[in-house]
Image (cartoon, rainbow, N blue to C red; front, top):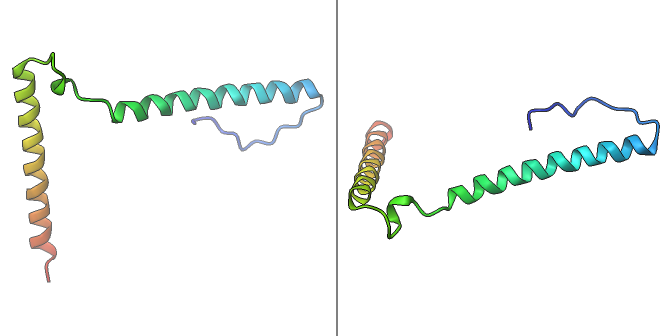
Length: 85
């Protein structure tokens, strides 16, 4: 994704076209694999929710979730107070 493909290439032989096609296919497959790995990591079950997780890890996860939820509520309240008519 960080490569610049805007340059126009001129191809003289069919072999050059096939080589370029193979290179593009390889890049597309690499990007597809990266996107797949990121997508599956989004929906992976957290370690703290697994049966083998220690109770301290579960409590830590619960506290972090609670603090995040509280922070979101406080932000919503502050925005409401600031922008209410």
